[in-house]
Amino acid sequence: MIERAGIARRSTPEVRASGVRPWHGYGLGLRSEHFDAVLDEHPAVDWFEIISENFMVAGGKPRHYLDQVRSRYPLAMHGVSLSIGSTDPLDLDYLRELKQLARHVEPIWISDHLCWTGNGGINSHDLLPLPYTGEAIAHVVARLQQVQEFLGREILIENVSTYVGFANAEMDEAAFLGEIARRSGCRILLDVNNIYVSSRNHGFDADAYVAALPAERIWQIHLAGHSDYGHYVIDTHDHPVREEVWDLYARTLERIGAVTTMIERDDHLPPLAELVAELDHARRIGNQVAQSAPAVCA
Amino acid sequence: MIALHALEERLLAHLRKGAGFPREWCAQGLVDSDLGLSIYANAYHSRLREALEADHAQLAAYLGDALWAEFCAGYIEAHPSRVRSLRHFGVQVPAWLGTHAPFTEHPEIAELALFERELLDVFDAADDRRIDWAAMQALDVAAWPSVRLGFHPSVCLLPTQTNAVEIWRALKETQPPPAVSPSATPARLLWRDAERVSRFRPVDADELLALQEMVSAQQDFAAMCARLAGVKPASEVPALAIGFLRQWFDEGIISHLEIASEHAPAQRYAQRD
Image 1 (tube, chains in turn orange, cyan):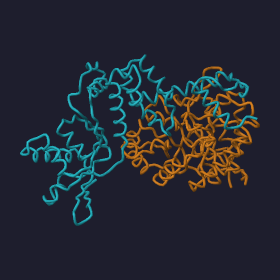
Image 2 (tube, rainbow over the protein chains, first blue to last red):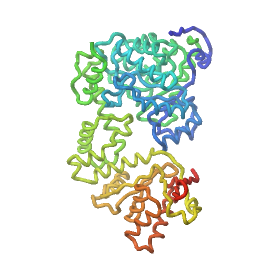
Image 3 (cartoon, helix red, strand yellow):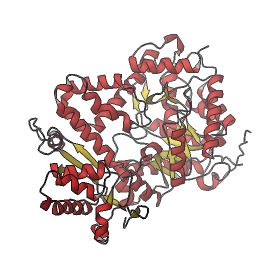
Image 4 (cartoon, one colour):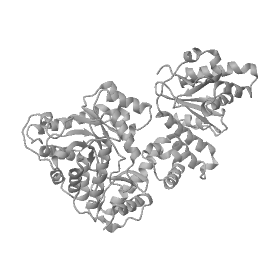
């Protein structure tokens, strides 16, 4: 069923997001380099996102810190191994471990990527692009339904940055993602940086991409840095969020209302305080936009 | 019509081998398809190399740039990842180094790699409680011969032929590695302590026998003493054996005690976290 977005004018992101879309504020990716700082400094971060696979270990420091952070902050679980678009069978062992971890963590939600990571049993450990075809939609939707049934919850699926498109595409990426969300019931984790990166690489309109998505299904936003090589852009997660991505983020919120947001940084990690300051910038944008933008309500 | 399976198979083969993905299957965006494919291919290889280097930092330093690059290329080609996490991508590294020239000519190389892998396993092995010496003392002395020890899941007994661990330590401290020589002790014991710090220490020949009985063969205390009696005068065995037990408890590497009885099922004692 396609939910309809109503229009309302409210004063805070929390109130404005209280319709169809849950609101958890502003989060950061939890990285091992910051474990001690998170516990010692108790930063003003509303929640943390973990990479699920990093904590699918038997014990030791990873699980110890996971429990410590979980006792103080809500957590979201973000995976990189679902490989929802692969034509290999779903990895049921992975799903069992994911479900077990979710029972332990009680996350605000579970997410992964709209991509494939391996084929023929070989894992590329990369988020590889899918062709935007009806065949791929049917394949991904069926697997998402299986995953969601197994986990007993709807998950969020993230758009990835891409560097190659395929000649057999029957639609654009936004239509592909939107249709999968509608048919599978999954939510969307919208990576605004990835939209920007792919729009530069493929020459599409980033704002039109956002406008084409079912807004009420966008439950989370990722922000990250990228490397700009002039005639192409790579999603590197090793820089602060760039100005053009902040601008697209603001325009996205203006269009779809407040969305739970987090910043990803995976390389060249600065001190935690720097990331918290960067997150405050996202918070300021969210609050500014909240004064005027429409909200998505049930 | 390009089937999804065929597209994935051909693209992955392209990433691994650098050729084979039909250019007519690519749409022409602003980025040329050759460049786009090379971005993925470069990322594939660099990600796997980085994983190996993260897990084997001292091995990389020991080999130097040229040999390290040769190793990475050979290993990545021979062992495409079939594991979910990059944490386990290098699990076959020691075996590969032990069977491929020129690395086979230097046995300390495979041993250095094995030591680094064991440290990784120690780091995230399962948690368990640790019991202290008082639990052993609380037992009836008559029960001691049938005591079996449950070691902490992080405990690893690593036989050593060369001074690879000394080489590892020097490199870790950014010192020049010592010349290769036979190992001064026959094994190392590795474990994670109660503060979640990874530890290791040398194990002499007598303790190795004791640990082989208790850790590897999961025998009881009587069997351990009998094994020691094979290499030591009988009068020295009790003190030696009890000394080993005491040390293991003090190091916090014992998680359980089991006492087998002829008349009752084995009892498990566990005292404190």
